[in-house]
Length: 446
Ligand SMILES: [Zn+2]
Image 1 (cartoon, rainbow, N blue to C red):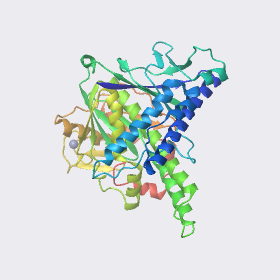
Image 2 (image 1 turned 90 degrees about the horizontal axis):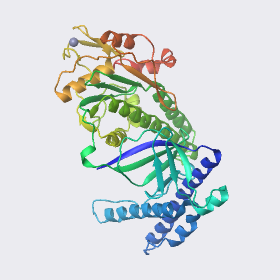
Image 3 (image 1 turned 90 degrees about the vertical axis):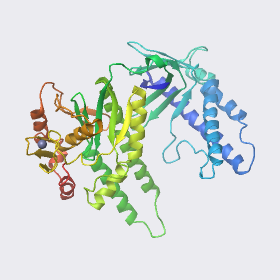
Image 4 (image 1 turned 30 degrees about the vertical axis):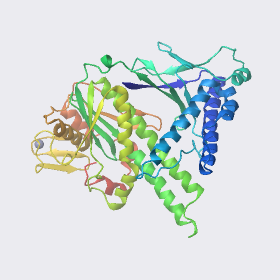
């Protein structure tokens, strides 16, 4: 079975950072050159597989193993394209390029498993082979490798596969993922038996309850606000365009920026949450089925924005991928009725929602999104879940990572949840809501 270790790669000096960027950049241009040539030959109905001259051109920077791996990856992409072409129901497109001129290139490279080495320890280290030309240019010895610091812990031990190193422009970090083949007898922790359920929304991006009584809440309000501002900005720019011009370079750039910002935060959320759940011994993650859309609780305009914001499939794919790294299973379950019923007594007719708070005649009083995730957990596991045993943890996005909003303290019960739902504002921005926000925030339990 294949699992993936992911970690941050940190160059120790400016020189090393430059070497790494040169490698990533050369990989992108190698991919694009090979792909361009193949597309030309494909449309001219010629043999596309001949690539020797590209290898020769890039081997000096990338080294033989990486140059070959990038070309091989491109060949794999073409092979799957041809395989799809044989299916009459498909109309596939030939493989695309890495990045484009507006974006700059996507910076990414592949390192074959025999061309790198990772030493895990107090000061973990990654060493990769680089091309001879780069070594000469930057004064590395003939047998020397590029040595980089590694931040993160390996979750899996096994036979290492092809390493992928990517540069994330937004966080300005290099990230690596390493697939490893794990022997079947030591895949999952025997301790893991807990279940967690996730409720997705906008003011709260994800509310989560575990069967062990932990609750987590990720505040999405500032992020969604920014998404909305950019959307409005795009609409303004579009209104000013001449009739015969549907879009502009600036609009396209804003769209990409909007998407990248959201993707960055959501990806980081998934990673943060899943690693916390792993530590709590969670083996199964239940996520509400939103493929049919959110409950009709927003105005049409806001609803459309919510749909643009929450690309549900993208989210579940990411969740699935990261859970797989940790050996956790994802189950999709209908979330019908989870936002209205009382997590304590299960009744619907006795509950009242006021903004973000759900109260019930039985005495329950808590955060509505957390209540919804607890209801989903109860429904999906067909078990009644005891009330939370710890104070819910809240997180907010600082454009780089999700930070706990307050230190978690153990031992308190529902009353703590009540306090945190009622009092302390999520963040200063929430204090000054404009009328539109108020409309968004009322009536759906935010
Ligand atoms: Zn109740």
